[in-house]
Image 1 (cartoon, rainbow, N blue to C red):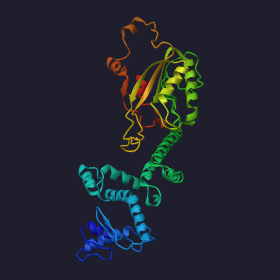
Image 2 (image 1 turned 90 degrees about the vertical axis):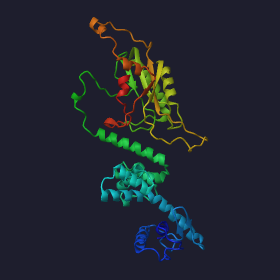
Image 3 (image 1 turned 120 degrees about the vertical axis):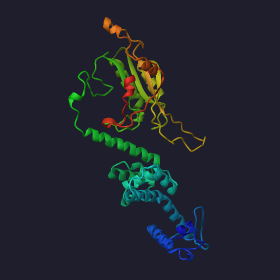
Image 4 (image 1 turned 180 degrees about the vertical axis):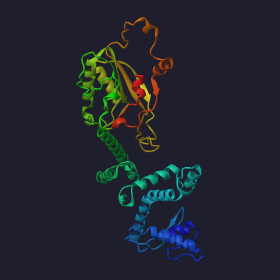
Length: 398
């Protein structure tokens, strides 16, 4: 094949058939094998199976006299080759894993990077996707990155999303979001299919009720503290569905009013919401949540900025290095604090032993928790299949 021969130092040639006689038999044999591997590309406009002309690592010299049909067909072949490189890289990696065993040592990682020009993790990820999708399931009309986005799903779910991506014309970010939501929905379905936990796993002094937050089965003034992160209208896979964007303000006001009813005087409310959201348009989520709470009667006290380390390496910031329309992303969430009436709690009558115990909080916790900036990770795993779980540390502090 012309590509291999030029990369291995052959003199120029205008087609595969005119190889210099100075090549060794081993090189010609290897070139023949590589050439056959490209036979699956349909090239109706080309008589030759290989690309005509001279290919090097940095150039492609086409032969003179090509008609426009052949010229376009070469372009299509190059496109197909480019779209296939990640698959080839993945299959190459899996071959090495099967033949040479685990390749996680630093020496192996360096060898892989030197051989491919890609990082070890990039090559390994390509191998994982290639292993998830056997050849018959790989879609030539869908980029490799789309396959990667759905590779963690069961085969039928993954194939279904790839079909939808073609029909709906999804971009990569859209199929990634769809795959994430579907993965969460599957986790919820799996959790709901499990038998309910035995009653003894719940402490004797804890009661668990499930109800609509707008219609709580609680008496007036019976709650001292509410810690919550309400739905943000992000189309999450909750059991009864998420709140529609257009109904979110009314929903927030309704449950704020109900929470106010069941809260005792001096009781407190802590609401965890993102700074802003973009589904359904750019929404000032935190500002709206705070406004609706005060409209429902709550007294605003303060806000804690919580850096939850869940921004990752997001590149959804607009066109790279362009000031035209940058998109601001914040790796933090907000915790708004409210009270029913005055913030300061009434001091209960304590017995002498209780007074001698001193403050409930340790000094280090008191210093950390009264700082308006908190840093601890969010919950990465959907425990019990919940699509939006709290980390335990959040309610513990509040």
